[in-house]
Image 1: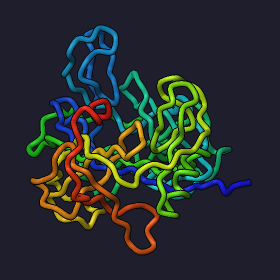
Image 2: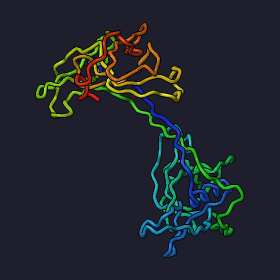
Image 3: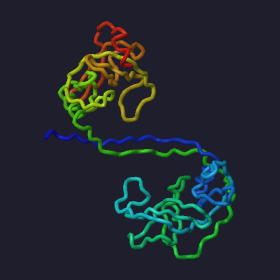
Image 4: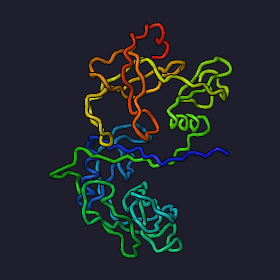
Length: 313
């Protein structure tokens, strides 16, 4: 059997958002070891707070402090914590209804094992030593057998409230390309580009997907395309990416390889960025040991007529 290709991939970016008055007060409160909820018009206290009543969609902003102690309403044991989770050792995910609240807050419970966790058990907040105004200011919950603690009645007003947060988003996964794209990747290692032809509409798709996106039928007939092609459209990149050693500005383009009915994207080099144009004829440039072209450069041929690539924009 052919080798099944697999590769670890990471998608990561910082997500920046501004905070309205309710979320600002909640996160600033955590920084100050205060838990705030919001009271609805029917008298319920929601923790974590939201800006609109989930039942009536009415805007709500009446902040109320709740206690740092509460009751576990449900739980699940996490035997193998992952990167970025609250605790590095096994712990329980718990929903905790804090004293004074009518809804439950999700967080981690530090417990020696699942036998030490039960619905209805009493817990309290363990605060992080360093707090910045994030849900991680609650380090975790811990078992508690003392008297319910009473809030001080904080108004939700702070001298230095948070106005925005940056939350890192990251997805780690293993990518398996499947038969069609594995053939495509293996051909690239031989400096060839192959697509697959649809048996119904006869279009050649590059990279191949194993099925025609128009007809919905499986594809298997391999067709070698290129190596030259035509720039169908492009953009000028002016923001430097952290993981790319490419000076800005540079051009990223859609290129319809000769014989293909689907444009792929690649970087254009070997010419000033402001001279790249639709219809430009290009060819791949390979570097030693590379499994795919480093970039495409002009061939010196006359530009392609618009009618030859207008369907591939």
